[in-house]
Length: 245
Length: 219
Image (cartoon, rainbow over all chains, first blue to last red; front, side, top):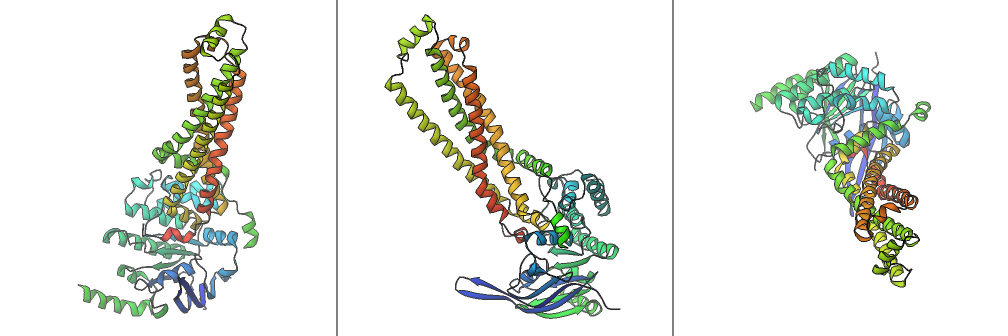
């Protein structure tokens, strides 16, 4: 059975103008992300990882080449359509959690639904259910500053799931968390991935992420260095662990 | 997709109002400093206006005691000195309002730069530029209206106290309610307009922020 593609890039190049110098951050990347996949993008800083990640998430447009999200060419979208895409199709998770500080956990999760025109009552009900699902059923009315980092990231996961997106885009989701909490968030993402079939695309340095990923994409110097599948990964992770321990 | 896009509503106004009000409450310290600018400027405007209205009224009162007090102060006639002082006061009021406008402008701009992550996140969640603009304009106008109302009360109180000191109880007896009400309305209008005008550019800067700003961790 052919797998459904949710994100597709065709020879994507991105050039930044740094004063008089042109810097080519991406040098022609072609890849496909399949629906329901858990994919990690790894690479050293300056490798173009972030640029590619932003491109896939509809946050940046390529200098040349094409990015298709759900078979829609991102470059062709106007501001309204991009906002629509971000609202309905993509859930974002950030390294710094980025909850709206003046809103409670419940209101934070409700916000994308309200942007999507859901009524307040429906949104409240769904947000409460989502928070219950991420294990924060007893923290609905807490403000972000009353929650620990791990709890805030859980709220962020619930918020990302608010409009049943096709993709969750997670930018270093464990970057500001300790080992144990980080593992919990990774497991939570995997759980969402398995239960709801949402595609997870994560930019990360975290080797804990490797064990749950279906595929890992290594970026170096603006190019895809290699793509490793789950089966091959198991062996490699063993090697990495063996080396570090 | 485009069909639904047309239906997307930026976010109900009530949500924007709620969010702006909460933002003010959470950043009350900053809001109070911003507001103090408009409170002082409007209090100044209001006290000058009220004092002038009181004097105008007393001048036309047919009460020998009042007239003798005014005469003793040299205020019984529309002398050139009185006109000059009024012109000077008008200038001062205009200047203080301008300073107030720049103050709000600056503080809103700071607020926007501080909240880059919040703004970026909202855009990632699907907020349109117009919603971001709405939040900042509303926030500034709330501050403006509350500050103006406080300023009006303060200015009124001050001018009445000063009037009592200068002319005695005649001020209360012949209080020019209508003229003072007019000054109050004018102050409210000026205060609100200033607070909205000062927020236009900062709100525009906020709306033009890219959603990718939400990802930044370097600050």
